[in-house]
Image (tube, rainbow, N blue to C red; front, top):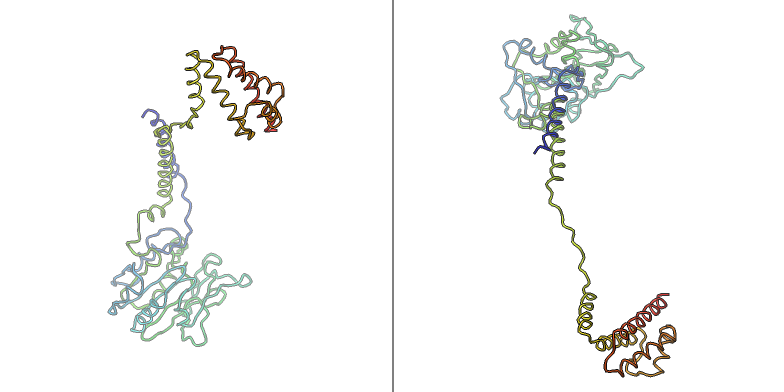
Length: 393
């Protein structure tokens, strides 16, 4: 355990240093276009959402965290449905219910830089972006002559504009510095769609930093003072989708803490596994004990003093060797066999002659001495070495 204390102390110190560094360092500005009512970053809509009760006096403001299709299943809902997004996406089912919602006398306000889905096809309009050769859209102006003021924004922050189709019945409500339409009303049934291509004008940056809250208020003042439904589903998803990991990864400090915790666990497992892993025993291959057995048997004969018996076994082994290696008949013991051994084995003739003479002498004797047995062993060993080398060559 003492060995681990050092690693634990190092990890704790590193973690503490990382937390303090992250806490005291200047926080970079998050310029992501979330348009979420919970975000206080420049392009969030926290400020506008807080101002809605003042714009629509005494009317409830409901945050919607459901798909359009689910929320508008209740045909008794009525009011203003607001969408502030970077892009507006609605499939055919969502679009049908939105159209039915407006047809009954309600209003849908959509501020988005571009539109995906069948809504734009149904209302017959499309969006485009100003080319670099045309003046940028640093100012937004309402078509109403009673509101002649131009609302100034950073260059190219609102460069997208609307292109209504020839069959579109619309009311122009605003344009940019280049004279391009960027805000219009499209009547549909008893209600209307309000389409804007400048969602950044409704962001925290526009309302607070640029002090242009008047533009957002004037744009929304085209809507009647009725209950408001504020869409957050396309930005935050359904309430159940806020999993623990999604929360962790949505905040930089928590994300770093999560990754550091994972790294610490992996580091601990690596060191722990090396210290506690059981030693794997080394398994030696099985030994060939045949030679040991032969040595034991030979030692028994040798200690018993029966040298003739040992010699006879060596002779028998020699004859078997001639039969299996050189295909010589071991039963016939004569000069012809001796000549065949010299011819087929390639051994020296003098060595073969000495072996045959010694074997004849041993066979005719009733017993032999230790020196005779040793001489036989030496001669046979020379024979095996000579024949083996020549056979390999």
